[in-house]
Length: 264
Ligand SMILES: [Zn+2]
Image (cartoon, rainbow, N blue to C red):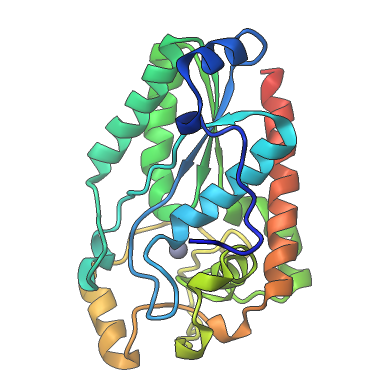
């Protein structure tokens, strides 16, 4: 498929030979690991949305810095999204082990500084933290987790994004900018957030408590019954312009993190 406006990074591990990697390791030991999910994102956005988000941020920052990037991990922990077909969920303990094994394999040949780019938001973070902590302790490497929600807090008010949900205006804008062929916004039905008294799950919201308990498949079945789809938020507020500003901001932050990582 010919995707409009998408750069093809020259630094993708799967397109290198082992001797290319050996040569890279003589002068650098950083690597980017994009991690996403394959899970339903409504009837207007593809199952791979979270992975594409991680992939495009990784590719553009890799292009700007020359840092190599690993093939994306297309699977995350998504049991609640099994309510709709096409979703592939791996167990949390499997995600921890896969991420650890990726880092272990790469570290055996000299990669020592890892930047994990998380496209699956808070749902993946707990398991990634466990893998990262174990890798740092057992393998003597440095691992940082780059999460778009946390790294874009400062620009949310300016862009007028609503709260973080699922397939909402934020990731829909991002997809519209980077993968416009994959989005069919005309099919989107909003499911605006209802105000909650105590429970806020959004790093942009000062009331976010991080007392996070994931949604269940039953929760999403109720959403499906009430709204006809399984999303949370207002994709109708999405725009390519917002997606560009969001993407450019995140790539700049990721470039900063990669520069910082070089000296860790
Ligand atoms: Zn998503």
